[in-house]
Length: 86
Image: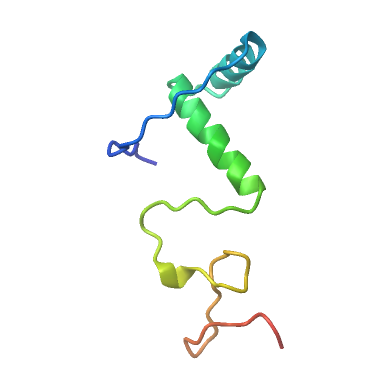
């Protein structure tokens, strides 16, 4: 996945020595190019674990269902949105 070079927001955080060591250890083990990339990846994974879908900028609003907990809507054979109920 190509890096998004249009990031416009800066986030500054303070970490303890232990948190920074854990971040750097994980970063190097995963061969992440920078601390910022490692933090973004961990943030994405944490949000995903909580069931939050992070938009890649190509997702359309119609891809999300209101009653399906923000999951992509499933379409049935005739093109209508599926409710997930039979």
